[in-house]
Image 1 (cartoon, rainbow, N blue to C red):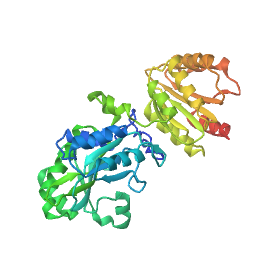
Image 2 (cartoon, rainbow, N blue to C red):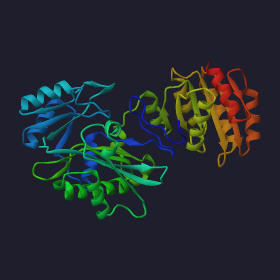
Image 3 (cartoon, rainbow, N blue to C red):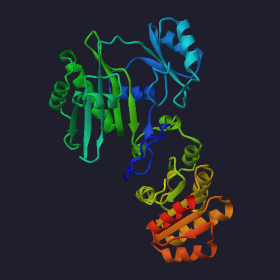
Image 4 (tube, rainbow, N blue to C red):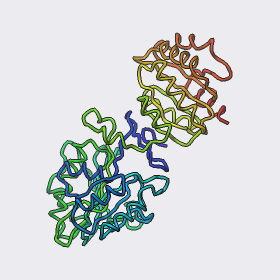
Length: 402
């Protein structure tokens, strides 16, 4: 796994990209609300959680047909029966009853989005994300929308027009027009597509997103261009600049991730057997890498941050030890501003409070590491071991995980 990148796992859990806080994935309805804040045209609609509210939302829209759409952070909703076209209030009631509570690839539908149906002449694809290797923003545009872009890339990679944008220069109208032409969009869509792409880029940059995607971006028979879907991932590290409380409240988290969120720990659940605790996002990611290099697999990414006290270690160790996958725990600490003896005292105090079933291996280095190791020494046992280097500790913890 490349350093600094954690993608979604099979349940599309929050992503971490190597900078601290987990990214924030929006549901479609939230993405459309986000887009609307940047004047991107989206369908009128309302998110509801009950069947009666679904019927009321359709009546409020006042125009049939309407689309009843399951809100889950996973693809394949249509094939699973999670998107239905309703011509009457009775059909809205029937479809909302069927869809609410539906399981789609392990995701339970708790919210449905009721929106006015759109006439579609053509479907396109548009997105912006960051190309880290190029240190530029990457835009992708295709005349083949409505399907997963991975499928388009595999079947016909030439169908995707890419543009790399220097963040200093931004996206100009002329560059956007050249991009639209290169993608082979219908000339009738050019003006509308250029307008939306410029707004989408502004949403991506000013909105502090890691990804904005419209699939499909549609051309209506009237010539209007319109965002029929919305996929948005926000950079969690930028949350201090925004009011994202509503988005945070609806994040899909498993039991481990919810406990970590409530304890203000930066955590991403994985599928391995070695629990990881480190202070600092970069060190935590390096720890995952070295565990992998010596033949192990990480059960999580967990950054306790700087100045971690006993309460932080209690929370971290409890969350990890409650994970049935975990068979050993690696605490990897490099003291900087946080001194080694403070970390050691925190670990000792935490172990006095909780009974950990998995063996622990500690590597402690950096500021006042000798003092910290001296504090830990009297407490060492088969269940609490210490190693001098990160590599030694990784080998031992993988060995203990079996």
